[in-house]
Amino acid sequence: MKLVATCLFGLEGIVGEELKHLGIKNVEVGTGRVFFDGEAAELARANICLRCAERVMIVMGKFRATSFEELFENVKNLRWEDIIPSDGAFPVKGYSVKSKLYSVPDCQSIIKKAVVDRLSKAYHLNWMPETAETYQIRFSILSDEVTVCIDASGVGLHKRGYREIAAEAPIRETLAAAMVQIAGYRGFDILCDPMCGSGTILIEAAMLAKKRAPGMNRRYAAERWPAFAASVWREERNHAIDGEFHRQYRLWGGDIDPKVIEIAKSNAKKAGVDEFIEFVNADVNDFRPTDEFGMIITNPPYGDRLLEIDEAESLYGVLGRVTERLKGFSVNVITSDADFERCYGRRAEKKRKLYNGMKRCDFYIYPASKDVRKAKKI
Image (cartoon, rainbow, N blue to C red; front, top):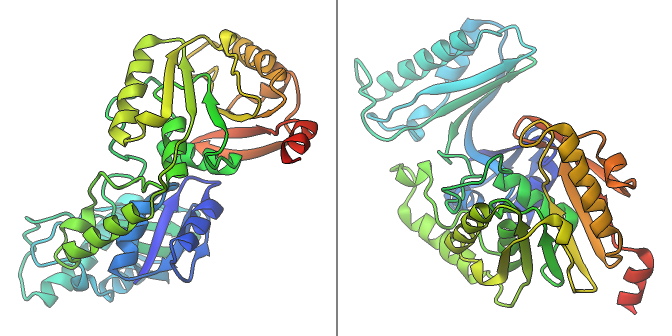
């Protein structure tokens, strides 16, 4: 099968590397998505193990269409019966950008009619009952290039299953996992988040260090489909468990809200990493780690969501002051505030554009002092 993993803008390269590390072949990085080849095992593995992808889908077809007739005929010629049974439900969603077929409702209707036409003939039915499992059809039309897929994930992959209750304005799990990878955390020194909220960054970091598959404790749409054997999913989960590391990790999270800390503790326990993370009710003003070496990754409140802009920027200044003396710590901060560096007090050595959902953000990277890093190596 030709498969595709969709992702937040800016994470395509990371998802591509994840797929390669999973032993998956013919990885092709695009914009907001990464194509790859695989069979049922690779479909299951990608769903269970990818940390930074939003969905995994089966690519039914890719073609060019500038008229509704072309769209209808090309969709009708695809082998939908290979996946969708006679009683399967197949709603249609999608989008169109810079294309002659710009009306999304009309495209939805045409694609639906084409699939109905194909399946009704394949199964010798006058009408499609659509009473069984759902096979969500998703299409994209970009500059008249059409891609038509069936969503194998169901609920988005950022829904790991551990965060039923979240603090206000949480960061998406997939983005948190990407930040941890970009920052280079490997589980050796302490990792701190002095504004941890519901604990997402620390939980994702602990799972990454332990090599725990993020999708181990949830289910996927394709698991309910007759075309894919349940044994394939069991085997991939067992392989993921066999690949876990077993050692001790040290992670610390602080937040000024005691209710949020309780949520973070609950989330970590559900994720099975609570033994590695210490959550403390603490003000960022009092952040004083005793370790000589470590890493800070944090998602402070943005001025346009939880705090007024001046309050948020004041908080950035506090963060800059309390971390200035931590020469052996790298500091990694995500925010949508373009004035962050001025408020923090110094320019970042690196800056990377990321998206939290549809919100443009920057990930500011401040490595540990070169002298301290050199001394550590010695």
